Image (tube, rainbow, N blue to C red; front, side, top):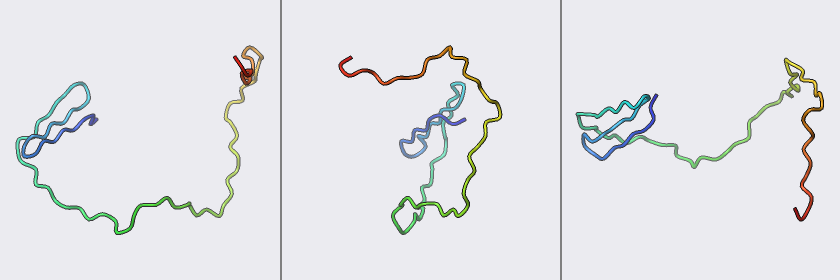
Length: 77
């Protein structure tokens, strides 16, 4: 898996991989321009008309009381 990339122009491209492997590129990169979207990215709400059912756990865990319930800390402590 790829873990790090360092590019310093020309053929100075170093790639760090899993297990400490380091690779160096020997040929120059030819940069190209990539057209991006013409509008600014915005978060749009998903359109969903169906209602989701609550999920049921596959394994029911019964509380045997060995772990106490969490309580809010008292003010001033």
